[in-house]
Amino acid sequence: MPVAAPRPRGGLPSRRGVLRTGSGLLGLGLAAVLTGSLAGCGVRLDGEPAPAPAPVADESPLLRVLVAVAYAAAVAGRTTPRSTASARLAALHATQVAAVRDRLRVAGVDDAVTDAAAQPPSSPTGADARTLVRAESAVVLGELLPVAGGTASIATRVLAAAVATCGAAGAAEVGTPLSWPDAPALPGPAAAALLDATRAASYGVTVATARVPAQQRAPYAALGSRLAVRADSLLAQAGSSAGPPQLGWRLPFPVTDQASARRLVQHVLVGLVAAGLDPLATGAVPAGSRAVDRLVQLQADVVGLARGWGTAPTAFPGMVLP
Image (cartoon, rainbow, N blue to C red):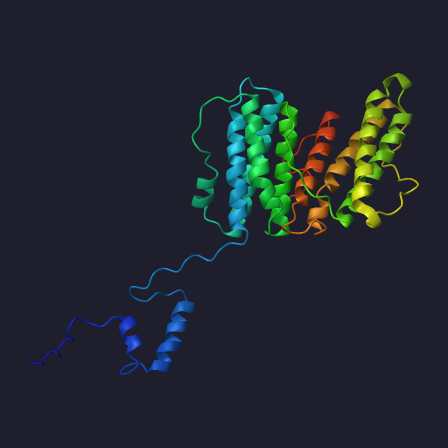
């Protein structure tokens, strides 16, 4: 009857033990090659801890945006008495939550992670307008601006700036503008880009004003004054980067009466909002610059002007989602 081979003391060696031996079945060089091959194929040896998942680009800043905007959405959603402004802000924040979650999902972040981030903390069931404004201030100034002015990718920084713009404009619409911190001037090229867009909008408002009966020109004149102040400030910040103003701009459609004049004002304000974050998207406001605080404040002001003239609010003003 055959005799069984004696078992080594302590039981059979593990695969890791064999590979570490360097003699016998596997030579040391082959062991190293095989170990590398197993690791490259995702095969773990006995007792080897599971490798940490590869980090997803911008996962941390995007999750920070998601947590912040989910909180703002929860506060806006429970604000009483319910107003048109708070209801609209809640809906815009809900759109933002969905969009940021989609971006994280496409990037490969597990749904369980985004589910947890999008779950707002427990809080009282009611909130008034003052509570909502305080929440928006905490979210915009404390969470979103640091991401927009941080070192994430340009796409993530623009997204954070757009969400911050929406929250700041929404707070002003609810009743109280945010108290913005002091921020450095915009870099010259960034200010020059906004100056060109502001001059174009100002020209459109001037044309529209001339098409309105004199007794109804007051709001047009007030808007023109606001844009003139903005242009003067941007010119000072642009310095030598500013070019001379154009003599005129091509109108998008004939402006012949009061209805078309109002439509022109809406058109140029929508265009000004669309261009408002271009300096961030093009790198004219670089990563790590606190000048992004000033950029977002300027953008929120323009969004407020545009909404005052009846333009449709958007969840990401100044940004086109891919």
